[in-house]
Image (cartoon, rainbow, N blue to C red):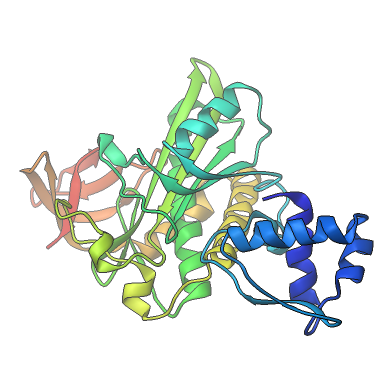
Length: 325
């Protein structure tokens, strides 16, 4: 969105009632004709703006879109969101963030998109990404950690997403190892990280975050491997996408700052409290074939699932699908 158009929206939301064209032109330092052009552009973008002679303009309604200006104005963070890139359409925010990171993007750079034509899930799966309803987000991080520690950051983003859901809805999500969020047993979010690293350190990590906010039942693909849902379907209430985005990025900022200061332990403890498998009997399968079953005793410092089988042997699970029995 054009910077001046974003300022006009801010004026509408900060003033009570109508805002005169003269007041807007003074704030923007442009002519009344230029103000009218910006108003017309906003209407084209889906904003309903009423114009009344000698009174001015009034914002009646906004489209269901993520407004980068609103996200930025509500975001109180130190690292995450220092740079915000918003795209109406893209193939994959992870691919965009990866390219920006290779070009030297600062830590905390966030790529948001309204629509993805090639959203990616875990193990090469497709993440359904229709326009106008969800959150598709990727974050550039440059932590001073070893490559084998990078999976810890996926757990961090999962906890951040869970906190954001609790703060903005009355829902209580559960975490499904390693990187899914469930509501009522159905998948509502998936997290995926990608990395560029050398033998002795990390160049950068991309945290990919996909959360089904306002998706309706008919927008889900028919060939889903597991049942999926959205916050709207579970709560019956539309989610303000800009507000949710700012809350989620703020929680991620808090958790990442804590991670840099205190390591993985605090994030791991909260993750375990939210995990649906902690202390319960589970089965683990890979490619649909059941491999083993036992009690989930937690995760190790690399994020691997710890599974104690009936013969009292502790197994370290690094991939597969975990189901609570």
